[in-house]
Image: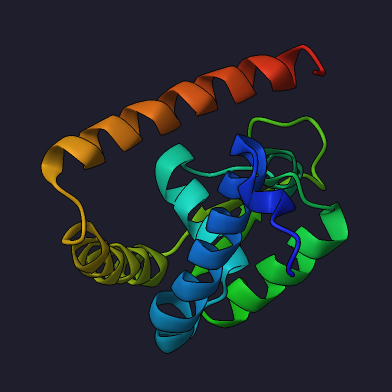
Length: 152
């Protein structure tokens, strides 16, 4: 018999569900658009926050600097981001990463496809259940933020 460890508790069940959702998003949303989940996280962060340093991107996504640098190189070659001098820094070597117009268009395309896929998933649930689930997830994220601040 298979071990149901991950489904027997809240955190385990959320982890498995998140893994499965990311796998499906990769296969049916990101890959057909020529992107990876990591690339979408970066362009989404830049879209939301505006220009950022590579270090800020790395810290925000909880990834290593070398991994982020590799991803940024790919995104730059694709024309989705650009590097520019950080005029607010005394260190002339510090750069800012920002979305290009092409990057903004690509992110809007991701959002459009993602919303369509969400509708497909959403049709399996009544509106009241979706509202309840979203409320629960919001509460979990608030507690996770607190946990992260306090090193739980």
